[in-house]
Structures are given as structure tokens and as C-alpha cells.
Image (cartoon, rainbow, N blue to C red; front, side, top):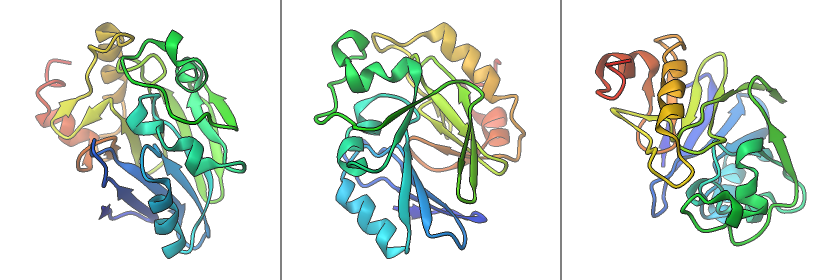
Length: 212
């Protein structure tokens, strides 16, 4: 688990077998929080939020792989909605047809909210724009705020996400990486795995982006 410097309350919970970052996000001074990629240990996530004096009002999925949504149903329960791109919604409702190479979540999510490119998600003190970045999965997205971006499994520090799963697309991945590079260089980048970085650092040093 690692806290990041930010004008917001921002904490990464990554204590799980895949090292997946589950991001806990809230405006400073607000008691309501948004959780990005609740893949594991829902009770631990709730404990961290309670310790910070925060109540979750929404969960967001950067994509539909099990290590990012596996605990979503248990975390969300009856009252918390999960936002996911329309192209990855089958991971929650019809995983056999989704053909991702990953197993299905063990429990269905009760309140699924579908998003598409360009949607603006408004929560108390937090505004995020959906940027559709397919390639890793058909419905992979980045969540872009004024001061940072959550990239899921599109870009990590020094590497990029895989595009060799059954429903991945290397061509879409390249297009999405080029779109990522249109973001401002100073923008802090919080990935689905590993440490945070910036758009500019990846533009300068990531070997998978240098040719783009």
C-alpha cells in the first residue's frame, strides 16, 4: 500500500496476488470516496476507507479482467454502483461470450452503470472523464481528471499492457497509446500495476512509446 502526493486523498491498495492497484480517491474535506478497480479483498478496502473517514459512493473499472473487478460485487453490495465501459460489460454478465482468457467474477454485480468515450462522471469534489483506450481489452478506459489520469493496464512505468489475450487488439493498443501521448507531459499517471509516473516520463523513457 502506498500513499501518493496529491491535492486529493489518493491511496493505492495493491496487497494482492497480481499486484493490482486499487485506487481510493476522495476530495480533501469530503467524506465520500470513489474506488478504482476493486479486484481483491473487499473487506480490506472498506477498512481502509473507514480508517480515513470515507464512505464509498462508486466503484470504477478500468477494464473487465478479474484482477480489476473480481471483488466488485462483494465490495459494492446493494448500494454502490460499478461503472464500466459498454464493451467490457460482458465480463460481468456473460463472461463466456466475452472470451478474455480470464475466469468470471465469482458473484454478479447488482448495479452496473455503462460508460462510453467522453462521458463525464461527477462525484462529490471529483470529476473524471472517460477516455476509451481499447487494446488490452475492448472496453479498456482511462479516467482523466484535471490533475491526473488512471491508466489501468494501458501504460505502466517503463512498460505497457499486454495485447495478446483472446480479445485483445495490438492495433487498437497502438492507437490508444498514441491517444495517451496527447495528454500533457506533467500529468501524473496512476496505472493498474506498479508505481505512479507521468505522461512525460513515459514519453521520454518508455521503450514501447519511443517509436510513437
